[in-house]
Image (cartoon, rainbow, N blue to C red; front, side, top):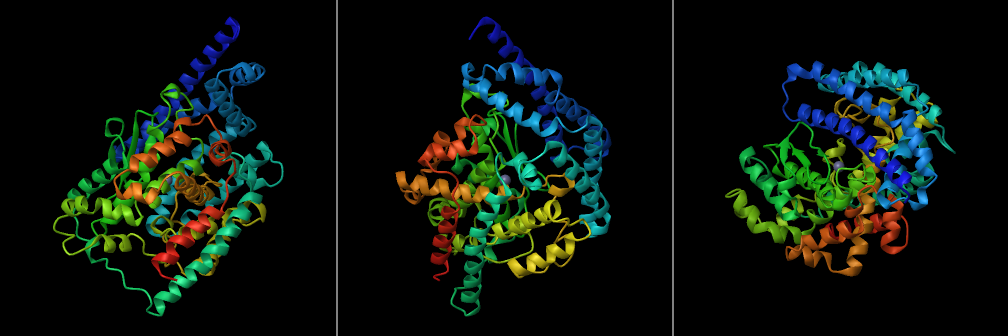
Length: 506
Ligand code: ZN
């Protein structure tokens, strides 16, 4: 590179450091708010966090940013890998947001801040009518944003692309078609087998009555077994479990302890630790840059679901962890075998709540939301139509009826901040995790490794093919880099059929 190009690259990196400083301050404030900051400070914190978020947004779409993109973009081929990756990320954000008039974006941010509080209140009172006017306004904003941004084929594509670069309605229609075609009959057979008395009842009596203090020890144990590095992470408590990262050296997770079911915190921690292990295993040379982050929501979910389901819900894992669990929960597991723990961890039961769903019914919950979002952005459905559509689809796909709005349409926070297009990442991520498992099994016996406490071997594989790159490679580049083929739902369908046909002896 010439001296002049070196200087321009350095200025670009310095600009991004300032932008990222704002982003991390916003993230820290959010962490603080969710993990025990005094309620009294909500208004003040929201105000100043909003100002910081606005400053970060302005830097993403500034004339200076456009200048960097144009000027450095012309020299893209001779740039180093990191700067090329940063440039691609900045270009994406610029294309997505630059067309939105700043005043309108400000009004939208203010609306979503109020909408989240309104959603919380509406959910608490189980009354959709309190949230409906906000949702209606948010939809109107998002429809305008889609038009400002533009799209090739379908308006909903523009929203999907925000979370999963390149993902389209056409691809998702095929994916959900395959999943629906496999999961709906599988679920039907499981329920029929149970109704006919062909399935041994599963014991669950040992799941309740474990105090928070004991569960704390269990969640720490799970994290250690999975290889989560506590020198670069910590576990806190929050109402809804989540993970957040401030680069590879500070990856935090939260959980929520339920006395009536210790498996809830067990699996939520395994899930969030999966997100954090991905973050902790990135290459040191991208540390504290915009690439020191996951590449997309679905790839992130593929890692959390990998540790939660493919590792922690498999038979060999319960053999491996059994003695430690028995000790940690003593005497609660006296007389309970590893096979009973495994069975309790894999009960398939259609219910109304997505985050409590088992592996089989989970993608159907996501399918419902996908079809509703498509109805809103492609078929003219509005906030008034959503509850009836919600109930109709839950009855059709899961055979359940929510008892009230809190258990139905108000259960998820996502729409209150305008995150339309996010939900499909959950199902696509689960499918990616099954695809990675299939590839891993071609190289070594994954079950055998888990049985012998060799989870680091699985993590080593994921580090080599996925984790290390952070945001440097696109999801498609990551997947094709492993076996030369793109995302394919057949691995997910085979995984679910293989596992649950065997458990339920269908
Ligand atoms: Zn997750």
